[in-house]
Image 1 (spheres, rainbow, N blue to C red):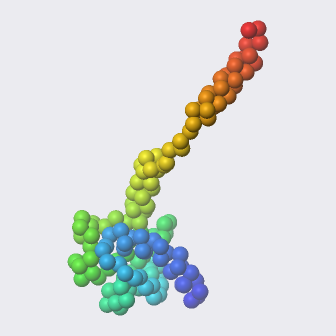
Image 2 (image 1 turned 90 degrees about the vertical axis):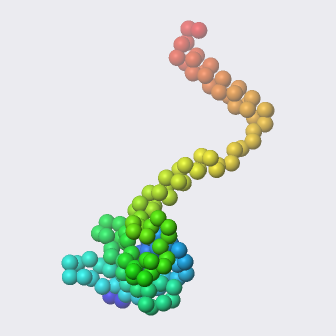
Image 3 (image 1 turned 135 degrees about the vertical axis):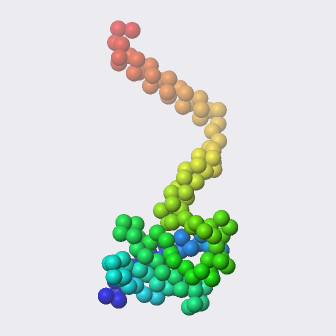
Length: 143
């Protein structure tokens, strides 16, 4: 059982880190300590932040995605929440969707353009022209 608990915590730690680092400032460390199942059957991961056992966290697992949100102490929320996230944090699925959208937006812009010489461009044009002529001859054998 302990092995499964450790495995679950290791598997979900990146999602916990993503949530906390996106919504809060000054996250120096995340220590996960144990799992438990509440009376309704939801599995939770407990731990603490910044090597301070008073800054306890509780991360319930969503049945589909795993950890979506992490509950933190009010004192931590008041002191470390990023501006704009004091009252409404983003869940992990929304953060990942935002990252994916940003990746798509920037990938076309940030992709380095390959410099091609005039000779390379001309060779490509000639090859394309030859392919077109060959295709036309196949499609119209009388010409």
